Image (cartoon, rainbow, N blue to C red):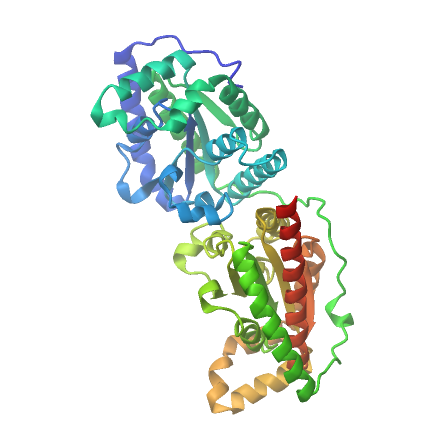
Length: 496
């Protein structure tokens, strides 16, 4: 791509100015339509150091209402974000419906620099490329317009620009050691950028612009933005087709075939609970020291005992090293973004434990059954969720998913007790009763969810919870076993 790039011929500056003004007027006219059609746009500007990325963004936003856009520069994100998955700063920054985000360098620059510095392995590089393609496709399929631009200059042009910046005290600070290193290693970067762009040119295409001719680059970038926006506004938001990747799945039983007769006496329960909570407390210290992120996902029937189960897991943990994230109906600002956004922004840092009380699986349960998303959306979500969880485990996270299971008779008994006990009445709502009437439909949806998303890297565990004591002990044992395994594997890696 870059190696075959044809440089632009010099163009008439007066003519270019006229074209840019006309394009600015068009972009100005599109702003309100973007708002009305709820079209979110992400513009990624990559390119060489000193190629003019910042200046290009400045020109693109010059006539846009500041309420309709934001500019994100990962180069100035806090160091603490290094404790999250590498896509975290980009996923967390995606724009709301009807707004534009301009990204000043992004996932390509980050990946290429780390790869050339040998801070990531060849395998990690491949995983990042795969994650980028998945991330871009998920955004596109969710209705986002993505525009990817690379500003290209040759080595001589880069030298002249870096030299000009370093000549003045007011601009010298803009040239970093990283920039100078890139210039010295221009040929290696050229090959690396070219390879990355080839591997990430589908489904969202790259557009290479001649950065040596600033005004031409502004015109070309603005033309791309205006024309692609115009097309998206005319055709409506894109909705991706469902497809299924071949993930390594674990065969799961149907809910109706699960034996719910397991129970535990009080004395055994107390003894086991004390022992297991003590072990979990020890493991939490090890997990923190080894910087292993842990994500525990709870789903289940209403009144199945999720809250009590979570309390027994959380009790032995150091409160400074874990969070419980209760997931309710999405807020308006969450509905205005791709559905995984509100989970990306709740991920734990390395070494921390995050317990999700309800999760991203709402997409294929309540949103599916209540019509809060289209059929294409929820059918596509199985694969998107598997990709998301693979990105988490590639990062090094332990991901465990629990379906807290009871039968209808037990649910009815617990509903009735809640309704007849004043201090528990807050736990029962009209919505709980309505959901109970849809038990057969929910059971079908849950069975499909378990079959399609219990992967080897992020398995589902059905927790028999007619007896809450048994359910709590089983859950603790599963968590402890998984954390012990993760700590052992981390020890093996450090020894290797």
